[in-house]
Amino acid sequence: MRNADTLEKQCLDHLYEKAAEGKEELLVWAGGDAKSQSLMYTSAFTGRFPKVLITAVVELSKLHDATLEHRLLTKRQVPDVVHLQSLQDFTYWKSEGVLERYRPLGLENTPQRFVDPDGFFIPLFVFAFSNVYDSRAVSDAEAPIEAEDYLDAKWKGQIVLTYPHDDDAVLYQFEQLVGQFGWGWLEALLKQDVEWVRGTQTPAHLIATGKKKVSFTTYNTLVDQPGNPLRFRIPERTFFQSWFQTGAIIKASPNKWAARLYLSFWLSRSQQESVFQWPAREDIAIPAGFRHVRHYSNTSPSGFREFMHDRARVERLKGIFENYIGPVQGPNPNTLDL
Image 1 (cartoon, rainbow, N blue to C red):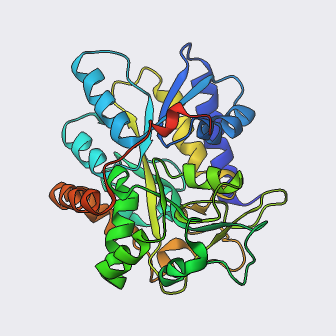
Image 2: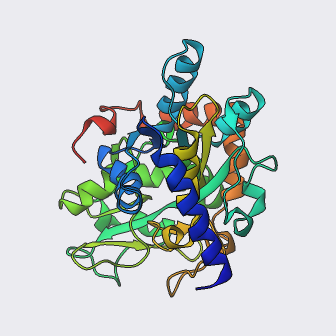
């Protein structure tokens, strides 16, 4: 075993020993749009650290942050750890003294521009939205990959997309697509009888159940999985959305040792090697045929971070896209059985 791996194991073992002494359950709030996503954050952790009870609550980041603010104001229970898409919140919470400083092992191997220099929040893994299609109904050769491909008449009525004015990551994706292909591209897309939905797992669900065939505002594993008919493909020219999901410990957490264990676990080599899409660490091997997300010219995690901090820009775009597409309709996707 390499020296770094030995040190990592010793660190995790020490944190586990201290965390197991706690009597309260570790509470994690995770940004997401399907209740089933909670298993991403609990199953592997519980398997590795069975003596530390954990609950992960998945909710839209824009709702989690508001609830946390309310709980802080009313002195109610707060989560021990949060990891969210709303990157601007971490900068604000740091300035307000809401976060606990912690720098786990492995952090030195992540892109430092996404690490708080004072150690109050860190990148944990990468999420990306791009082309997903049903391989049972769409061949690899005909699958739409570039933005213009979705304008082909054969996809009319077969496209499902997330409302951009309901999800800031999708909003940034659409801003970049319009910048690349023009508002005329969006107007042509709207003639394709698109089904607009809430949540970014919803398109994958509708494709998997055979109700739609293609989307570019959802996700899947990078490598095709046996038994899973969905295929995830990255375009060569068209912008695709990616960002570093950011995590932090809440200073008022009653479970500091368990919270440290959780962040250290996520940045550990073994866990980074098994993340859903891309690892945050750059010393982890990427599946064949892919590069680390920072090395693609047609995506921009740093651009998204800047976008999320410019709330005037975000709100302006929400209004524009609502006028093009119509108001958001449908329940919170976390209330559905996805």
